[in-house]
Image (cartoon, rainbow, N blue to C red):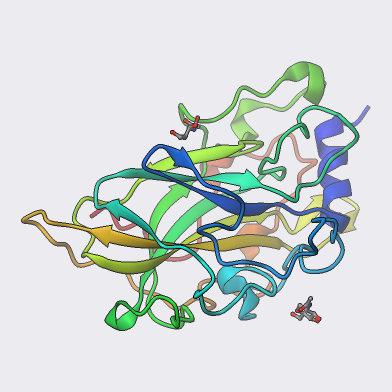
Length: 270
Ligand SMILES: *[C@@H]1O[C@H](CO)[C@@H](O)[C@H](O)[C@H]1NC(C)=O
Ligand SMILES: *[C@@H]1O[C@H](CO)[C@@H](O)[C@H](O)[C@H]1NC(C)=O
């Protein structure tokens, strides 16, 4: 029998999706799209096939802050945080449900794949009109499991899901990380990105799926050390269409996550 998690993974690839809709800051999990630039969702949040369909083109503008996301933010709140603070995200509504089947009880990062977080400073601190066309740098990359990774419940996953191929953020409902202590003060877009493999089944080839949303934050830094973030990149522009590292076989039980090489710039440590 094929492991069910992989069956669900294939199913999800057709119609499923998840959103980084809740910013975590100052130990508060904020409301859906309160600090995240909104998507044109229906009020009942039921639009699975429209704007929440997975994005498959990493060269499109939608790759920046999500399909149909607003390109400016006057309707979005901006959260003040200090450089060095712990912030995070929680996956929010709407989210894909598979009946009442755990692990689909709460919104989660349903797909196996790498998680990254990025920052881009708005020119003249004008975040409301900033479209994100400036420079971006990466501040977090989660590939292998860490102490924040969730325990994968074998009763649900049934099988065989060797630790050598478990992605760190797989099925997580939320994740916390640090804004580098030497980040220059100013107003920033904080972008969350998660990627699902391009091939989900040995016999079925699908395009890589990209999930991303942007929060608005204002970073205060009264410290004596102000760093120079980098490497700087443009988004879109970090990955090619058909990026080879993002095509792997979810059915391959021999896949070794330690051999995965994340394309794109190095993480800025601050
Ligand atoms: C992240 O922080 C929030 C708020 O403090 C907390 O509710 C959540 O459990 C944390 N997540 C993890 C994985 O530690
Ligand atoms: C979302 O964007 C796509 C193109 O990227 C477009 O075809 C579609 O009509 C848009 N939907 C809404 C609700 O704006």
